Image (cartoon, rainbow, N blue to C red):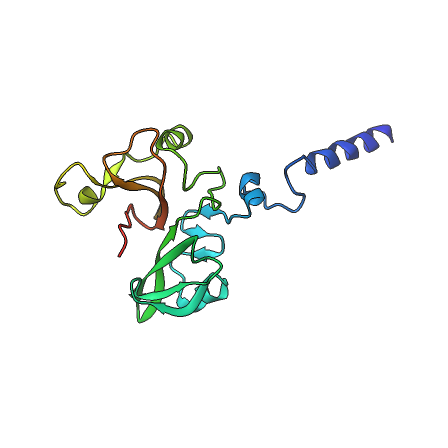
Length: 192
């Protein structure tokens, strides 16, 4: 009986570790939950996913029914407008989410990375992080100078978490991520 009680007490103490809510999703980092941010994963920002139709995106509560001329689709709801946006494309006659752009510092990957993370921190955490690539190179152009937009990505089959750096010279290990772009391929979002 003593072993049973001790085993139960150990199990209870492990499920209620400080800083980890008992009802926390197992794949969401506690740092993400404490900030009130949404988890950023391959092709997904919280419930919003690349490839969703307009109706599916409206059902998340993150996207409004108001059109946005720049993105050729719909804009974010007021609650999420300062945190990010979506870019649309037409597929088989339906508007679908093509890119998810995250500018918020509170929305993070399960490992705790996002806007404000340095290139050096990304390199330490992700050994297979792509080389830093310029927008000109991604577009198949020769760079017109040393100033451009830059990106380093974490790849997974059919998707990329693109960590975009500010416009300027090639980032160094101390340069901070300016935007996270979720897409099916390595890409940069220079704006519109």
